[in-house]
Image (tube, rainbow, N blue to C red; front, side, top):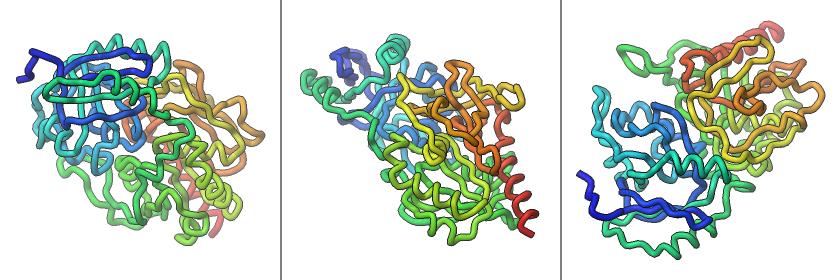
Length: 387
């Protein structure tokens, strides 16, 4: 039972605004950018999504912790988000797949949470002023140096110009054969031969790799800093550009030349998601910009401009492709129905495409899975052309 006699955690915004509550997980101090996520489920997947590096996540849905923690649902081996803010203290776990309580999981992995906060007021603050720089502290004794905490928030440099992909990418290459979860056996292993895909890991979520495997791909994952020569040495049928954190222009200093070289040296299909989408756009001559508060949630409607259909999508990004800078031969394929921002592109004359949202997260639930199938179809068509 939480001790409510005094606050044990404090969130300080750079403008001096303070939010007090009750800490859970690991004690300590962390500085980060603050965002909010509107998803009603998936807090574990969100906390382990490498795209949230450098960010604290405010959950607008109040029932956090009620399904506990299930190792199979991790998108990365550890939580990557710097911390979490919730309205109510985490609910006791009640799910047949759960193996651990949320608070115990966070504590064991040195991540903190803040409960008992008016998350509606905090969300309004984020929307009005943009994603703020914050410092969050959890102390069981409730003794805070507020002046120092606010100073830490003000000293945080933010995510613009920051390359975080190097912090979350794999150390060395590996193969992936685990497929999407299915009843009753869970994650089966892919055994049949498929199209050879090289996936560049800028912070890849595991479920993206599972979707590639389930769609018919033999996946080899390479670190973010891999060169075009290293990519093409695997003689892939296709190249995948993953999601990831930070400023795409910063990561693009080494990733964009690689993408350009792959496009120049081969005609193989390329598919990008999220950060991969942004860096493909940069490689094709477009520009990216920082958004006010970004898109984070599992209820974002996106219109496919080529079919007229609307997909309900999962999103997690603080930067966006400026559609006004798309060059000749690059078509805009998807747009957000919330604000009209770009959500997809493709080359007019080559099997190269990408989307800003996360088709593997299944919010529709299957509205966007066709993108993985399209990638495989492109590789199949390319194989017939080359035969």
